Length: 73
Figure 1 (cartoon, one colour):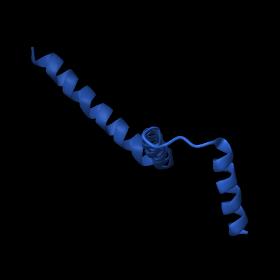
Figure 2: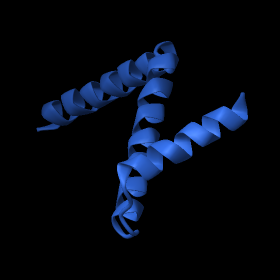
Figure 3: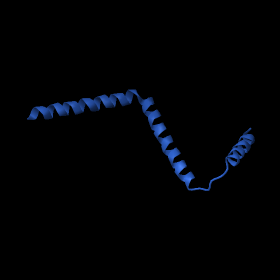
Figure 4: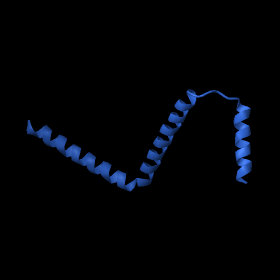
């Protein structure tokens, strides 16, 4: 019965090593994934907060954005 346990431990070790090596080699990819996740969380939080506020007309939004962009120039 010890044989399957040895195989399982060897597989776990191999998987951990492969995962660790991949994470080190693909650091930029991991950074991009975490960035995307954080952006998605922030967007969903903004949507949740927005649903609890008073609705305004699209023209008001565009006017505000336009005046903001004009003042930035």
